[in-house]
Image (tube, rainbow, N blue to C red):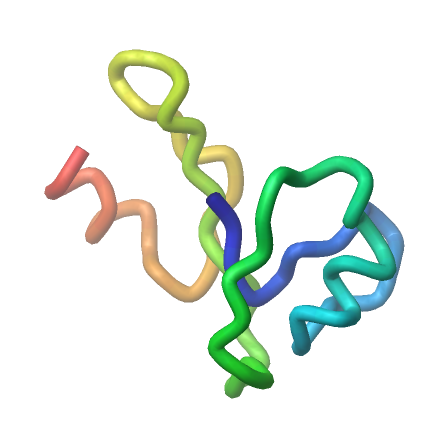
Length: 70
């Protein structure tokens, strides 16, 4: 699952669902459209396919906060 900064490395950030589909549509199964994102902080990326889950990128939600819940 992804949010806000669903974009390929070195590509512009996507703020709308249509931008995500245009940039990475063939690499994802679904996009949930809640409208344009707000703010300028990148998303935190967590790999939940492993145990324990791994924080791949720290973003708007700090590693310290996430580690309390995983």
